[in-house]
Structures are given as structure tokens and as C-alpha cells.
Image 1 (spheres, helix red, strand yellow):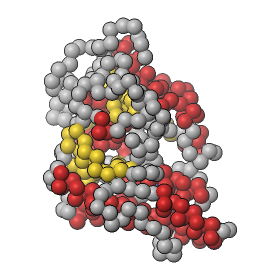
Image 2: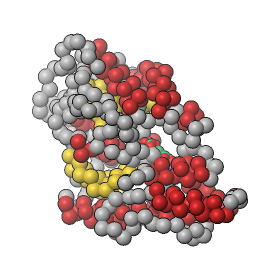
Image 3: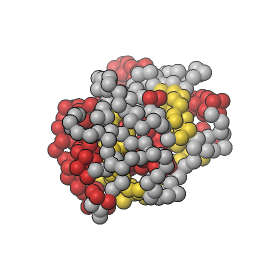
Image 4: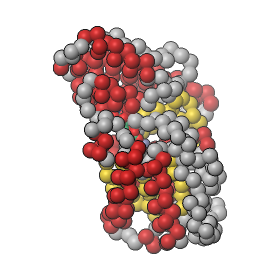
Length: 383
Ligand code: KG4
Ligand code: ZN
């Protein structure tokens, strides 16, 4: 975006300043339109002043997944009222804010453009610093907002778009320990639900069916298990499930429950195997983590949660699991990541680009980190 004006905003920001601070966060990278106001005090503790999330699930349900064009249009329609609601609930005028943060990627580019442009406009009009937040960094830092978790910690991020094991060493300092080579875990749950005619989003529906099914009835593969690295591959599991379902079609209710249960069991075992490796690699390369932290919608699954508790317990650390509303996409995590960056003097200029792809390995402590010309490329999933 070219405002044809001075691109640096607000007062000169250098070093660690601006404490305490209040930041507005905007999230529009997928199918949630969200805005929140968060305060970070001088000691680095966070407080959520408002957190408004509007899910577009109903708009996409008929299509069995998120339709990017519908998502972008829906963000345009509601974002201003969501922000107004967040400011109202926080009982603050824009002038009281210390910074405006928006997720600048990775995500569906139409939605990212909507949120980032809105943040730029507010920052410009009210002469406030802009912080272009990486959506994955926001997930990664949420445990510091909710639990004050100290660095370094190991993050297991599993959502519909991402599956990653990360070493979180500091703000803008991430080691990617593992990731998926094909589908994200949430995506695999969603595709399984679609195949079995359960609806969207699939994770909670598969979990519900799995609870009354037999996890041993179908012998599904445990892709990547036993390998030395910490990467995931889910597409083979999904195909194996489809073949089993085709063999016994038409499916009875019990068949569906048993398929869900066998699938969830396989995913759980894969997560256990991959995370054990991930934590080993963490200790080899970083040292002892302060905690295992989970984020993303999949962390709401009780069977997966049990696995996370178990692997954390095995090495004598605790599991930090932010409440589900802060594990899934929300504005508070964007506002908090914005506040953490602002506290370090890291802000962005108005020409910062939205990015469909933006791996955490490219997130640094440098200000204006997101000004990268090849910004808006096509891919959305796990960067
Ligand atoms: O973090 P999230 O709300 O949004 C993004 O994808 O960014 O995660 C949504 C994903 C969906 O794929 C959904 O099916 C999955 O998380 N999910 C679950 C459960 N709840 C949500 N997967 C398994 N079990 C659940 N209970
Ligand atoms: Zn997310």
C-alpha cells in the first residue's frame, strides 16, 4: 500500500520502552474475524481487556472447508464492528492505545490484506506504531500471556493449517524442530470427518464419535513413527482410512465410530512418537525446556491432550495448555505478540507487506522484518 506520505509512524522507538502498554490486535488470516485489546505491564505480565471473535463456520460449512474468497468478503463486512466492540469492551478510545497489531501472515491472503490494511489505517489516522505480527509467532507467545511461561520452551502447534514443533528461545527467536510434510493434523481430522459424512469442522465431531468406537478395530499406519526426526506426515493415514471405509461401505453408525476411534488412536501415537523426538532434539540443541506448551485447535482434543501430558511428564516438565479460546485463532494472541514486540522497540512501517507464506524461521528480532517484496505468494498451509 502506498500512502504517498511519510512511512515511519509515531515517536521514534528504540530499545526497551513503552511499559506498561496497551495494544489492539486484529486477526483475519483464516475463518475467524477477531479483535482484542491487551495490556502488558512493566513486569511483562499480560491482561486481556477485551477479546472478540466471530467465527465464519456457518458460511463455510456447506463447502466442507474454508473458501478463501468467502472468508475475505466476510472479514470486510464485519471487521469494523468487531474492532468497535473490542474497543467498547475495553472501554478505551483509540487514542489510549500504544500500538496497533495485525496478523500480516501466514494465511489466506485476501483475509490477511483486510486485517493488515485496517490496522494500517487505524495506525495512520491515530499516529500510533504499527506491528505486523506473524500469526505463528502469536500462537507461540500465547503461553506468556496466559501463564507467564519463561523462555526457552517447546511448542506443539497443531491446527487446521499448521503442525509444528518449535523451540521458542525468545521473541523473534524460534527453532523449527519439526513440521508436517503434507497435511496438518487438524486438516486430517477435517478430511476424515468429511469422508465419513460428519460435517465441518471435523475435529470435535471425530473426537465425539471416537469416544464410543473401538480404537483397535482397524489397523491404520503410524506414518513417520520410528524415524529419528520430528516431522509429521498425515496423508498416508488419511488414504488408509479411506480404503478401509471403502472396503466395508455402506457404513453403519458403529463403523463410523470405530473408524474415528482407530484414526484418533493412530494420530495420538504418531504425536507421541514425534514429540518425544522433538523434545530430544530440543534438549540437544537448546537445553532443558521450561515447559511443553500446546496451541491450535487440535490441542482441544482430550486424547491428544493426554499424550501431551504423558510426554511432558516423561521428562519432568509440565504441560502448559492455554484455555481453548486462546489456543484457537483469536485477537488477544495478536495483540499480545504485538505488545511483546513493541516492548522491544520492534515496529513496522506502513509499507509492510501481507504474506500468504511466512515461515517462523524468517521471523527475527529486526524491526520491519515483514517488508519482503515476494510477499503475497500463493501457498497457505504449513510454511
Ligand atoms: O487453531 P484453529 O481454531 O484454527 C486454525 O486452523 O488456524 O484450529 C482448527 C482446527 C480444525 O482443523 C479442527 O478440526 C481442529 O482444529 N480441532 C480439533 C478439535 N477441535 C478442533 N481436532 C481434533 N479434536 C478436536 N477436539
Ligand atoms: Zn492459527
